[in-house]
Image 1: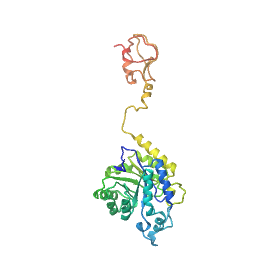
Image 2: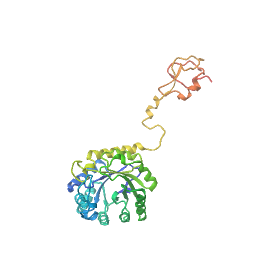
Image 3: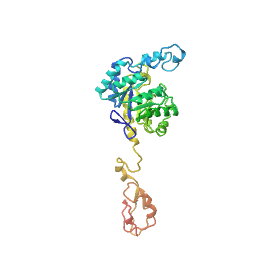
Image 4: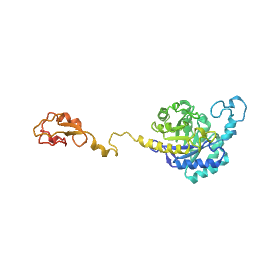
Length: 346
């Protein structure tokens, strides 16, 4: 599939998404700076989130609306999203900034009105967040735009992922990526079960990737080896910035390292090959081969004492040793002569 003309799939370099999320910390200039860092680091896309506290939840003092434990302990859902939301009037300048920088920008919509806003800005793709992967009406509404869709699988079981993919397809979306995801903030690497990525590709017939909430790049780079073609990571200016998502986000140097290392990993995967690689060809002469290691007179018998497998690799291959031993020399042979069949009496 393609987003903004960039091909995505196992035959193309990994598509790296820098997730801005709530790391703007209420300052649009900070958001602009993160966008610049994403572009300069080589990320393919910058992703934001489109919701307001009033579209994603309601203000309530009931216990189920209160957060207990974790990064946001003690806040209500409404307070968290009021703190974290991307102001809607920022969207147009953010999209313009992305055009100026030459980096793709798209968003995670959390309700129909968010999709409508993003459509008015000609968003080239959509991301369905993990918590919304079970919101089939939202997925259907997004799919009807005809744009590529990326779905995070955090918390979803196989049936729920299948429902999401089927809903998207039935509504007209045939460019789908499913991301393996653990919706913990931060998430322990040992819970990521990266082998699920290859299974999702086969089970659901989609492109696959990783939405990574671990605090380093090990899981993300490793995911390339099991088929991930998209990697999403939260990005911030400073992990100690005090914002809602700063503490589990990559800093600029780490984002640059992710882009570099993910591309190296993709190149290293290559394809099944058993021949000599270009960098090996110059060293092939230093493989082992059969050499005459003592002067041998015509008619003398070849033995383990005067013929050995040594480096370099100019003589007969070592597998021919049994064809030579016990035979006689066809002529006088000097020490350090590479062994060949014409030195053996027929």
